[in-house]
Length: 176
Image (cartoon, rainbow, N blue to C red; front, side):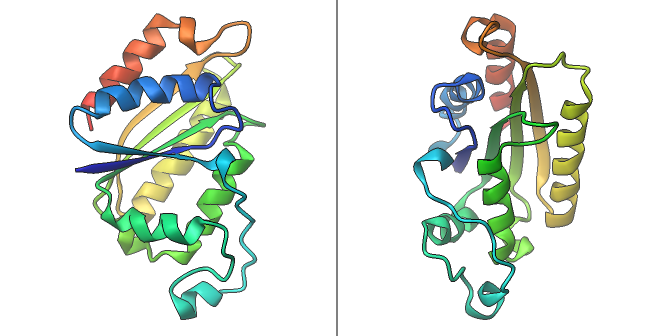
């Protein structure tokens, strides 16, 4: 069993990465875990040229083709992002847009997990909006929306000091 964790934060050791790494450690009991740090890549935005639909991969050679080639070989995906302006980070949004090159059936049956961190309280609208977006994506692609963890964290309330959130991350990975 293989899981790909897509880290969408510009900070490799930020709050969302901290929570996701806790999730990953527990997930290693069931999966080989492959971390993908989007901030290490120089992903360009989708051009909407549809070249990929005729050629099976994107015309842009920036590393996204390799990731898309490996996604069908995974059993589970976990997307990780800080909350920016009531949504996911630009890094994760660019990645998500570039999945356009894949046939949606390549995602069917995969377990999907989502971890997001933001400054607002957990009843903030952004957490609902992000969850609904990914529930719709899972419905469209046939992925199983297996778990969601929103976490309230910021520089004054760091995730590494939030024992409850770290525990919830470990518990979420047990569902994997």
